Image 1 (cartoon, one colour):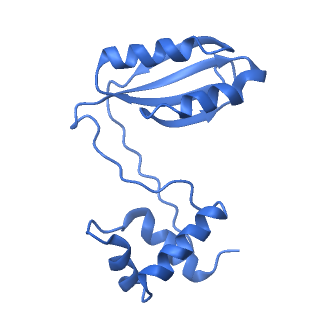
Image 2 (image 1 turned 180 degrees about the vertical axis):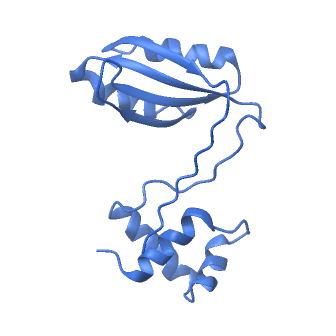
Length: 150
């Protein structure tokens, strides 16, 4: 069960982690605690499943990357294996299972069209993948998701 302090930590790291040589030290000061205690609690929250990922988000287009949303039709008994294989690509940012004909979706950020084609060719050849639909990004829609915990 989350304490009020845990909620304060989670609210802060979602959108207010400072850009600094020691961001957790700065954040710990704001939260009136010690850096080591904060980092230890964040590790515990991650181990308990409250934190899935921590990392920076970049304007990928400004860095020269091209994005795609990819939909796969995967044999139901192969979804886990295909998802695990997709997760090994550093250019994959999200991967999720959905109901429907196209049952596994992922987002891809690559430096070139050739890189995109290479990944898609490899993914399409994975056992169990029946179809691969590439939906390249044409316009950026940035949805900022932040869960305000009270």
